[in-house]
Length: 464
Ligand SMILES: Cc1cc2nc3c(=O)[nH]c(=O)nc-3n(C[C@H](O)[C@H](O)[C@H](O)COP(=O)(O)OP(=O)(O)OC[C@H]3O[C@@H](n4cnc5c(N)ncnc54)[C@H](O)[C@@H]3O)c2cc1C
View (cartoon, helix red, strand yellow):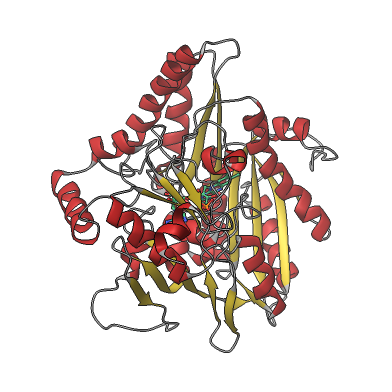
């Protein structure tokens, strides 16, 4: 079968029009488009021939994983011109090498399935995020996802040993090494990590594995303020022998909303507190983790770094604590379109940022509900804003934009980033370009021009 037939006629590769919704509309349901076609290749060779065919016909391509990205990178444009290439059928685990602590997987593997396959070999792949039941490793790599364990294991960029990529002209770049050390020339794979599908289609990856923790302690801790949480974090990093794997900040209002929407959850502590920290410490091997964590918590109480707290008695209770964190996302989603930000500042500036952002925002827009939560241990906060109900769509858009200007302005003043992990896509393109130095943009455009001279790979995402 030639490439033209595969692309346009083979019903086993092409999604029928009636089933297009999940490829056209993103997870949040805020963004949707109209694909020219959606195709689902089964092999890297299929991807290459589809890309060659699109290139020959001048058809723009949108690589798509689980479509859980939050910046419109994988959503086709509304004009019906773009071909969506979904990686969902490229989902084989090609190899697990527990001696090398690595695995090689195809891009369409769902993140949760990668966790399970690694665990079966007593290993851990540490990238964890609430979307892990739907997002794919190719999408994680293309967006350089962060998630809950960055404080210990780094971003996706730090977890990739090698890549296989179909370039915009259909050639297959084989950088699928599984070496920890390799200093031969430019590290080309890093160009594709975080490139949001603008330079090529990732078809497979070699990933770093770690020993699977045999002991995990999860604590739900009450703190009076973000300042206290930052101080507690500093102490935890020093006292917990680098075993800290997650350190999340949750506001009281967020916890209340989570308890409302998640059935069966209860408040872990007896009284309310303005803020909470959800902390996870994990170890494999000979450490006596529970004793270490208890000693740390006793010290923190004596130093007045926390006012109350509880350690999960078992895995089920730990999972309940994490469901509270997930419930904050769910509660916002149920309130419809809202402002999602994903900003970072130096951890030493977090308190200044949170205090000023709340004050400035409520002074300018007293009717909104700010919800600031997230990865305190990485200086990365989702400072989200839920608008009051009853606004027209146009008024909501204008209000959310004004809120974003306030938040991003503060981030700029504190030397932060407007996108710590979700990327730029189309949603943050204008804000990204406004903040980029001319030399930065010039270099980005030159790299794009060398690899994708006809600008057919995810056009209009990240920059014009
Ligand atoms: C509930 C929820 C929680 C989240 N939590 C986090 C979090 O904690 N940390 C975080 O970083 N992100 C988080 N995200 C957003 C995050 O970016 C994604 O969930 C995930 O990394 C995207 O994977 P995906 O497979 O859904 O990619 P998609 O949404 O399909 O695509 C994302 C981008 O990558 C490109 N792309 C996809 N697959 C490929 C490929 N094979 N080759 C080249 N380009 C490709 C797309 O074109 C697009 O630009 C969250 C999202 C949700 C819905």
